[in-house]
Length: 87
Image (tube, rainbow, N blue to C red; front, top):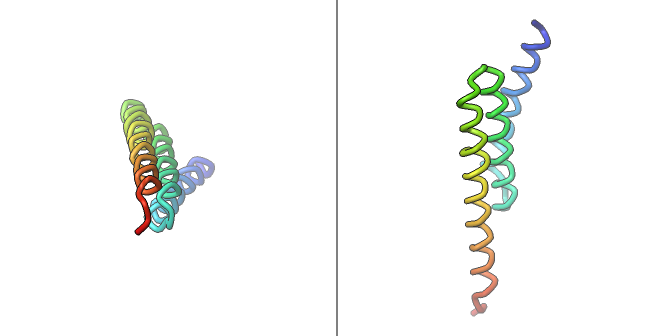
């Protein structure tokens, strides 16, 4: 019982910490990596609650697809700013 409560408390503190870090990150890439980590931690919370269908959807959509789209957008923004001549 105590171990289960300790695991739940650790997951809850991890979610709060990762969300605060991802919102306050200075670099875009760091914020994206922290956001994907937050999605994976949320997946573990859903699995801990025995909501396996929601956990799989969170892993696929929340961490996987959204993280990949954010990384592609970040990469395109980096390419466009590097290609522009400085005035």
